[in-house]
Image 1 (cartoon, rainbow, N blue to C red):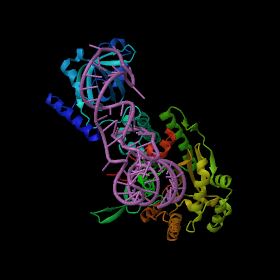
Image 2 (image 1 turned 60 degrees about the vertical axis):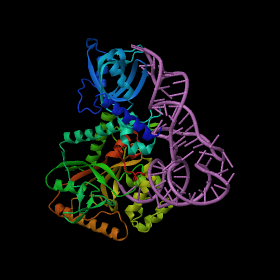
Image 3 (image 1 turned 30 degrees about the horizontal axis):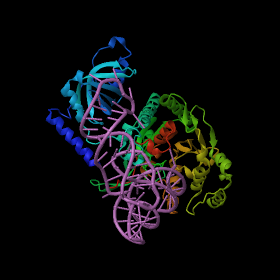
Image 4 (image 1 turned 90 degrees about the horizontal axis):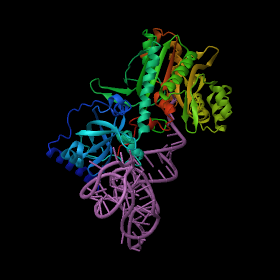
Length: 488
RNA sequence: GGGCCCGUAGCUCAGCGGUAGAGCUCCGGACUUUUAAUCCGGGAGUCGUGGGUUCGAAUCCCACCGGGCCCUCCA
């Protein structure tokens, strides 16, 4: 029986229902209980014999002549339904002939326990709510084909409860972030996704076009520059939780659109932000998973503060033997890096080589939450210099499960220094580096009006959810991850 | 963009030069407390697509399409 035949069979059943005067797609249905609420009633002796009405999708059917058992799944769980010809009548019972797995049914009845003790709803009336025209995934093995899981996520969600739980966790993480920041007096804002120049990060943007304005636009690659304008405008604590877009490859760590949290707080510096990150993320871990320690593979991640704070220079020196502070120019550092196995291309500047040393030698080892602090100025065109060392900036990134999850710094608010940094980025771009920060004249004008000292934070929400749920691929925490166009 | 692996029934998979298979799903029959219900019977396929080698290709070779993992790219 091919797929088309299975669908035709279900269409035939649909017609039989219609012929019998049954609407297979009624507009509404009143249920009195979810499956979870109904099951809870069985523990309550005073509720015995009360009539309950539930509704859900049929996930299993065991028919035994004049009686049948159905499993009904709804948003709260699953409940077994017992349908007896004697109770519902001969005609309604015969209806089951035209019911399939995947159909939705409303059931009114009373609760009892079977002889094996399973709480069960004995049906008095059945109502067809939806006739499904395609068969659901098979029940034993469930759905494992990764491509189908991603392309038809609804089937994945129906068949695999652990997948459902990941996305429930994701929703709770986002809600907890909002609660945390709102409670600290932050204001949630929304800034443009379509921008004339996409700034705030070193990444290639997607390009699009506005017909009426006859103008090329870019999808944002970061939230940063607009949020800082708001700090200039007097909002002292702002944040945005939003989708950003980067025109780059797809892998277990990267999806071209992902969710970023960025927050800015006047009169905070990067030390304050480290304390806030520890408090926020360990708190979220507790709220979402029930504990600040979360299982990860055969070990566990401990989110309890404080997290180690390691200067980037020390971390790279320890893991690769390269002391970038001892190599003040790109050629010298390139030599040292190549001895440590990093093949730097000629177009790479000093910052890019340091970044590569970090990615290759340090990042994979940072399983437990760790702050790396004090980055070289070449890598951080929007961060404020350290007062005692102008080659370094007051910046940290934090890592969990061997992946970068967040980035923060004391914001550069000196407009003249900022202009100089953009000019340096432009020189790197001219030298062949495609991923540099683009100068944003409008942003510079804002800074020239004066931005208070401030600390800014960015957190990759997808990767945070990965760390909290033990997911090994970013596609497991994005409902509809980027894929190539389907065949056929 | 590169390397390795994968694509066979609606689902999960076996078969790896000689007539396309299993379990579940599906259809018919029996069955009033089943729960991977059971028992009897029956259906189900462009073996990802296109070329090639061969008497003969799901099986070997090449290209393409799609997916996975690893590299590259990427805060």
